[in-house]
Amino acid sequence: MGNQLGPPARRLANQVNDVGESKLRLLWAVNNRWPDREKTTLMPTRQRPAAQTYHGLREAPDTTAVTTQARAAFVAAHPDLKLQPLVVVIAAYNEAENIGTVLDEVPQQIADVPVSMLVIDDGSTDATTEVAERHGALVCTLRANRGHGVALRLGYRIAREGGAQYIATLDGDGQWDPADLPDMVSLLEAGEADFVIGSRQLGQTENTEALLRNTGVRLFAKVVSFLTGTQLTDTSSGLRLMRAGLTGTVTQTQPQYQTSELLIGALLQGYRVAEVPTVMRRRLSGTSRKGHNVLYGVRYARVIGQTYWRERRAARTMPPARPAADSVPAARPLRGPSKP
Ligand SMILES: Nc1nc2c(ncn2[C@@H]2O[C@H](COP(=O)(O)OP(=O)(O)OP(=O)(O)O)[C@@H](O)[C@H]2O)c(=O)[nH]1
Ligand SMILES: [Mg+2]
Image (cartoon, rainbow, N blue to C red; front, side, top):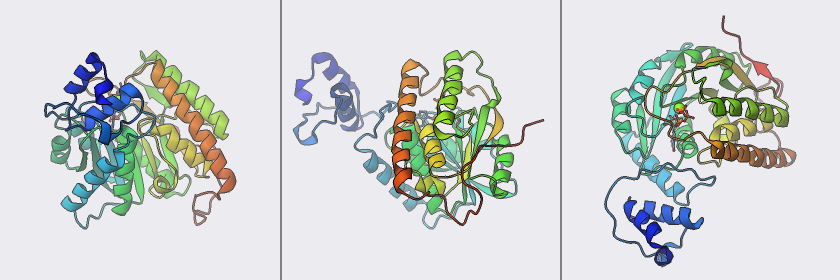
């Protein structure tokens, strides 16, 4: 298959590295399918770390191998790990300049609940892992970038296995403020919700010039509200808090566009979702690792549609996943307290 590529594609393939893995990925991107390893002739490569952001709507075929290896290395480095009841999971990709400040903002206790910090470094080519470790986080490092969703799922799994009761997510660039977490924890502690989202629509965003993104946030919130019957204002917030078990029962397959998949799945499985106002800040430094353009919006919309149909079908045939012991009414629109 490699021999069928034209000179420009071959030149490009030569620039990619990671001992063949990235080259396979590039061939896959060019041909829109994963090449047969046996039949692929790989050109000699320069040894450089992988540096591509993964944007596929399906996991790359080697994702399980990459995450299994990362988890095994993490477990070997931290045998008998016992995490605190609240684990803050941060998936980071090339955030060495920001991750230290983000971690420094996370308190050791949130609403009296002790906190562990877990960073999943998704194949960064900078010093994200080293900086995160210096700032007190446990770090699990993937050898190649396999997507925000993949990294978070690995983080959720490690958190659950370490005994977490609640899992919070933040981004690695400082846009979400952990100062909002105490209100969110209180809602879970009071048994009023299973999943709490920090909403920039109920609060505000400092990225007022990002018209396309802000319009998308409003539009997708309306679409998901309509589909799920739950009034939502922000479906793509990176500031979230949930019961740890929820992350194990909601189906998640998206490598990159993971927020709406988790949210729609949770709602259709009967989990109660609440929103609290938050301020979305500007990135501490650098530019978006994902990019914001029409294509991003189209992919996001596709994930909403696919997830909705999949979960609706599943909801018809399976009982709700939310544990019956949580003896509070099933999903209903809920809002957290407004900030003064
Ligand atoms: N694991 C993983 N994380 C990613 C990837 N791309 C981005 N991230 C992380 O996901 C978070 C959000 O990504 P951003 O690039 O900041 O996207 P954004 O917040 O929508 O865009 P900006 O507002 O421009 O920052 C950050 O913590 C990134 O480091 C990726 O491919 N894998
Ligand atoms: Mg960001």
